[in-house]
Length: 299
Ligand SMILES: Nc1nc2c(ncn2[C@@H]2O[C@H](COP(=O)(O)OP(=O)(O)OP(=O)(O)O)[C@@H](O)[C@H]2O)c(=O)[nH]1
Ligand SMILES: [Mg+2]
Image 1 (cartoon, rainbow, N blue to C red):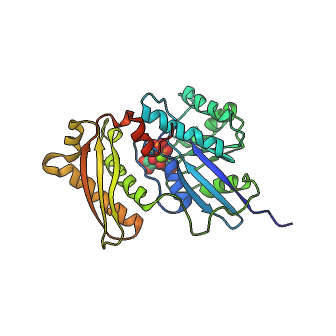
Image 2 (cartoon, rainbow, N blue to C red):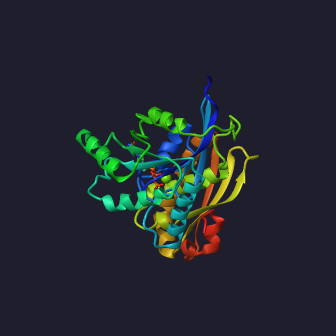
Image 3 (cartoon, rainbow, N blue to C red):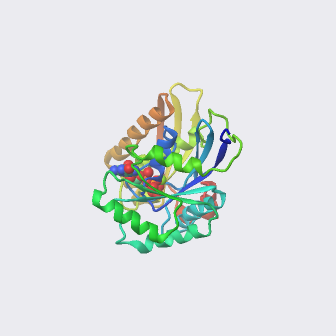
């Protein structure tokens, strides 16, 4: 008997910085989600489609689950939790090099969210390249006592080991279903969104403390008819002092951010780009409900 065609939604959840976006990009073999060494990089739910021979896997990358005090953080966590209801399979991804059972409460809280889910939960232990080998088996045993995972897969999203076995585990748990998206459609995010996100990624990579978290990026112009592609973007911050940091001495910081973002947008979109950046102060935007909604963050 031939296998039925399978399709469905896999929601990727887990603590901040575990490597969720790195994994999404690897599974899609292209960059649609930004990545940084800082937590809380991803702010929106980001969809990507993996097209297998006999299955279609709709992946949802989500913001990391964290203790949310500010309005923006509350909404980021909401975006992540909302994806649970849509999921046919949940992929819970953690950092195996860090999240040892020494800090179990945080993980237990996150696993409690999944208990409401009807969907099977596959655990992926990421960053095994950084974890001491002797740590892995006790860690797997510990996770087994915490939740009835459908499968546990060690992997490294960055280097690719373990990714294929993970795909097999996920695909096998998709329900029988139709092909929802055409083969040539890897994502629903626009090039405009990716460009704004790469500017934000560049800010995450070049600045520290509260500055990346006070930053939002808006695309003011995205003119595809121009060669090179012309993009004008505003980088919003909350305070004048942050604007000063982003611009830097004689404009040096902004020049660095622009240079890095231009190169990365060109690489990802596969065409040359001319990028213009403006830094603007928009007081308390991280608490502004209407503005957060305009950024696609749910109630
Ligand atoms: N060594 C190693 N680093 C990894 C691996 N996977 C991801 N990283 C790094 O971990 C950091 C966080 O990766 P992200 O993909 O941004 O993590 P995330 O879970 O999406 O983070 P948030 O969006 O903030 O929740 C980046 O510096 C990645 O390069 C891995 O398998 N091995
Ligand atoms: Mg992310």
